Length: 236
Image (cartoon, rainbow, N blue to C red; front, top):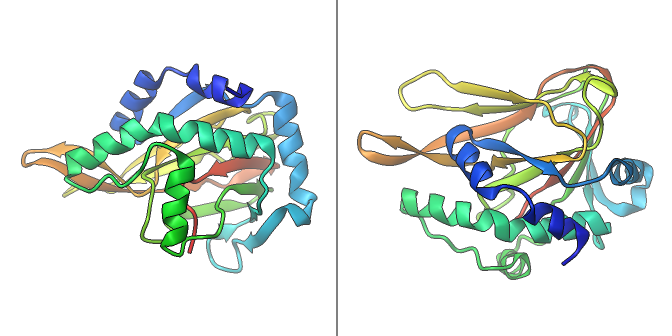
């Protein structure tokens, strides 16, 4: 077991599952050290490590920039993605059962990505995001194709309140016959936030229903904010 897998396994996954059930998101303990966060931040300017760069303003996604890693991934990205997938899998399968949906996800990330690739979703999706003053990310979902894993993880690479201000992670849930509910979370450096990709099950008078969820980032007021995004399905 790698050091990254050990850190992920040491988290209280009963607590995380309970909070994701209740709120749609939950913080993990530290998954990366301060030095590892600095190393990953430093990769942003190495253009050869990425398959594409997205200017959010150009596409009206917000303001700021992010880059999709190309393979081979840096070790922490590769190892954390593989280690977190099986820990999230019980939540994903439980949600599918509540909603009466298929649960196509096999036991390992490797097997799941093979299914994605067979369906034409072959582009890697780990993301390194950089925000400066006045940058923000519009509410959205990271779907990328028909095959979707229902949870993903974002890891803070800077220290909020010191390296930047503002820039809260936003989760907005559209509730049936009610106003939407928002949750804002600051991402401590090195810690991950597990959150729902598309929707989550909520109990209603008629049983379970899917509550649509989108996520984004509030305006960064000062400094620079970097995060590592781990999506568990590849893109078409």
